Image (cartoon, rainbow over all chains, first blue to last red):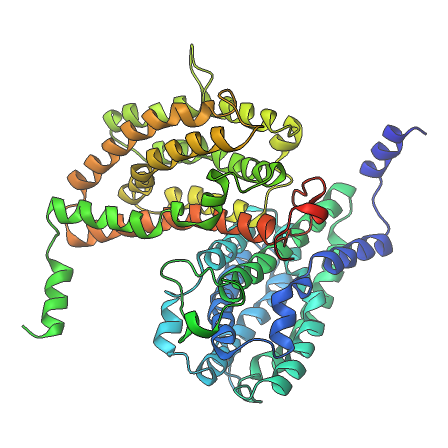
Length: 261
Length: 261
């Protein structure tokens, strides 16, 4: 076969389950935001408190939109069995009996970082790039196929590792971080592992044609872009010192918080 | 009056036309992207060809979405008179008899920069932040009020100045830029002036309550955020050298194109 014929065959032949899973894992390896420099600075104790505040404040906007994203997705699911599984995510974030939920645990972090809770809730100080990226995620699950909406969560495959690194690294390296403020991540290690296993199984079961498999890969790539843009914007603003007008400005930012302004 | 009373009065009393216009102009002064460092580097000849390519490639995604944004807005306008005015923008971008249109003129720029036209058209190489920001603009005019949708164009008030600086600065400073490649901006100087005058008049006429006036200010702020995020993402990626996986990589980027990688 010549090159065109090989390419055509590739486009038509579905990957085996193993190949498909490997392709998804490779996307994570290349594009998951643990490759971002901000992430390493965060975990290794290289950030000051204002920079950690900026991270927690911006990431809050992501946290509060997860249940909105999952509700939008559920509104498109016709199968009660799948809804029954998916609703766990909303309960995990919004809370249920005997569990305050992920959003409440996030306030433990922002409280511990001395951020005013009303300011956090207002989302006034977040970076525009954070808002655009997170909103794009909500729009994605509303507009794309159900398969793509579900499998955009596949980043959870790579989350437990980053959460574990975060817990150890942040507890060790920052005196303003403790077990209480890290409660969100402790809980998410197990939750994300269960969720990811389910979504990977769902992807393998429901993406049968090559085209469907590729659409799942694109959905995962899209989601890695969302997380990557959030990290890059934090780096540009709070490490390199280009904070956009109106966004959160840590105390003493101009004196101490920039590397190469 | 105590402070709360003054604040309450401010929230209820409409601004005069003059105050309102001044507030809009102040937003531009603080938040328009001519404040971004990338813009100054671009105009002053401090960028190399690969960095100018990255700018033209990313900005292309904005260009092709303007008519989509304006079509979405027109689908919400009930008044034929306003549609008759607004359609000019789509014709300006898409072209009409005896005028090839803004998108075609943008290809003159990307062609002149030796970017492959199919690659440009694919939008494969644009930064994820560019995509999220531009998509947010399209979503904004679909979801917000008509007044907000129309007045998000108020950034045009500040565009002619930046276009003039761009034409002079780029022609002077880059040997790969000439009159043909700058055709887009030459045309836009007059178009944007007419358009901006109309929208400013529209804002003053249709935003009567204080709440409406504030919503126009927020719409303008939103739009400045869109443009700002695009510039910041270019700076972070192509000046500071953090190009995300899959985005356009200029030739010899690793050797020559970074300032402080």
